[in-house]
Image (cartoon, rainbow over all chains, first blue to last red; front, side):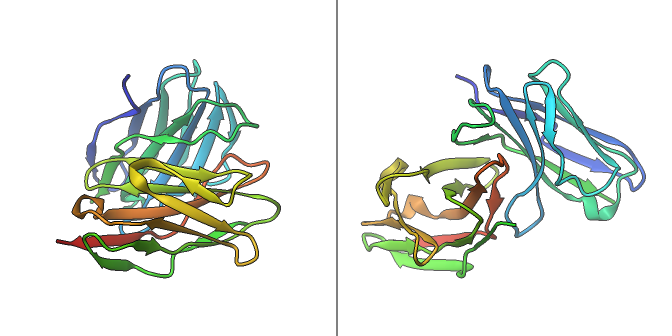
Length: 116
Length: 113
């Protein structure tokens, strides 16, 4: 079956522009995660959804970052008034289980955001 | 707060030799540990996980990892390296009660023919 897909794969934005990044999780996966991966670093957690509920947004770096998953499937990560420090690869992951499970997360290919 | 350390930025090994990629962690309570591999322009791929039970965990592509509670380590191993194993490897930990993974900074494995 299809894995996690993300679009666009590459995005170039001018400083101050708003961007929206899309994630299509694996069908039937309850949990969805967003991570930010800076160059040469490991991914860092941004936020987590269980179905449509955003249960953890402790990793969002500022109020310019906003994520939603209104119907419990596709998710969008929005960054308002982009800054150069937002340049990174944004990874989406999904997993089968709910909050108490230990299922592994399956990652998409990422969206590489470059802010000029 | 949990953390993961991967002390080696790069590991070089000859094809056919055993390989070890090191990982130590810090977490409150029981740890849930994962290894992922990242190939260029591709997403992270799951290799294996430790949740509970046997300290030696076997995973994909012939990889295994040994959980050592006293040393708070979860080193990745493979008995015989392949050139195709060359990639970036990430160790991650999840604390009980949280779903987020905390990743290490990654170790680049280079297997020479």
